[in-house]
Image 1 (cartoon, rainbow, N blue to C red):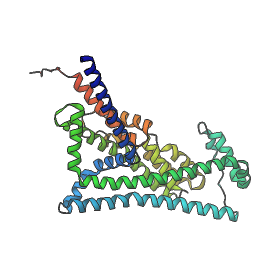
Image 2: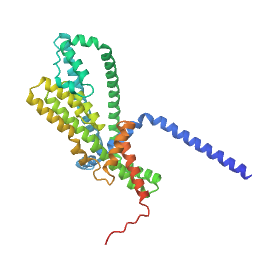
Image 3: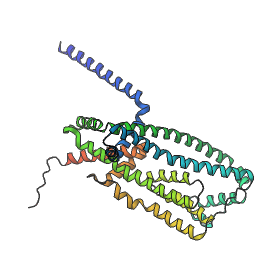
Image 4: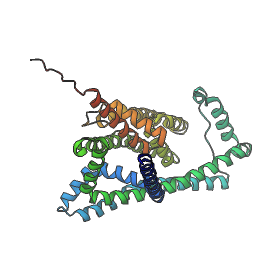
Length: 356
């Protein structure tokens, strides 16, 4: 009898667990197209909330109106530079096409210093010199490589377009979230309370919130500053397709790679077409922009947190290597939470006696 009762309970528990897993999988499949925009919406909402509270106060505490105004301002701030970069690329492409059709497109010869560039210097100098001497012949020789590059760029542009639409959706979601910030905060505290078995979960909720803001300021913020400064310098020097180079610099800076990887090529171009004095000024300016993260990152990353800056930085970089840009935040949050939980476990029962 006891065996029969045990078997019955086991089967019933297995059925319930199976149905629960099926329901969870079904729910996840339904919302999976919205997971990435929702994550970005949460990240943006948490990062922007201190400014939203000031906006709300300026509007007399009208929560819904402040949320609408914030969403419109955020969309304008995102779309304006995207439109400027797109116009820069379109204008540059149009000028190149017109000059090529008229036979007036000329490429300045490379400086001999290009040969000294590591890894690609020799090959780049040969290609550049050949293109400056006879552009049509060079395009014919490298036609297969150029076609493959063109297809890749078209595919990348399509992917970028989808990414922009997803980001617009994320901003709209963030507008909804900041309007309901108190309810979202209470829900998060309940989730952390259930997961960590710590009363009200406030400590880890606040840690996740502080980590998101730290990474937003210390990684994305610094990368955006470097990209904007680089763009201003290239605009002043009238560098072709400066918008494209600025976007590449932004991606490199987010990946914790120095902007000089791009600005070095731009400097070589500037030295080949501009006078010596402005070219030298631009070179110095480029080195300063590339090295500015050494000053800016300690000011922003990990500010106001007890978790060491190195833990946040390692989490951000490792997370990005695993999951792309969204991993910057997820990796930093997970590693910070893991570090804090480990330190709490390590210090259980460790009562340090203060010196008298």
